[in-house]
Image 1 (cartoon, rainbow, N blue to C red):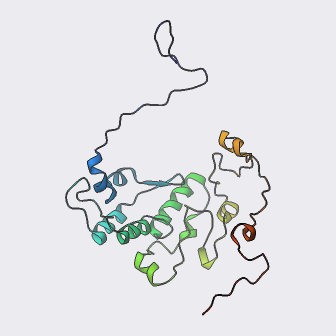
Image 2: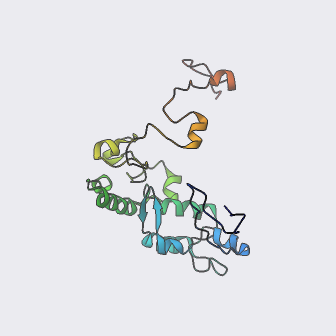
Length: 220
């Protein structure tokens, strides 16, 4: 807020100014950057649900499997310039499909929470699910700190089992379950507390079969 008498900018009471940072953009290099994995992944790693992973081995693997870009802003970086290469990168860099990252994430979470967690991904450290694997057959994923369920020992996924059984903090601001979300936008929707909402009538809206019916038969 500018003082009209002095011309000086004063802070608004109760408000703080964010840091303003100048960012340079070379818009001619956007396509090259989108077709490759950038160098910040080497330096900063990748953070999911407050866990930072260091995918050094995975980047080397992708460079060997997908090849690297030649020339341009992505020169020498692992290529993701086709749909298949992108799918391979997603599977390689996720701890749900890469056992090494799952174990790495649980080790970090163990250190921060003091609760035993690494065994949830135990035995999966060498497991990698590739794009070709998913094309050949359905593949069960690996128990991961990215999510709250456990698939360990052939268990079927159920949300929040790791939070309840292993005292893993919930993915909220406090680490506990939230029943009140005191945010302006939640106030606008009337959703600060759990509220009953009747299910949509899919039969009236979209002509779907009534609940309890067998539904339409599909001709063979």
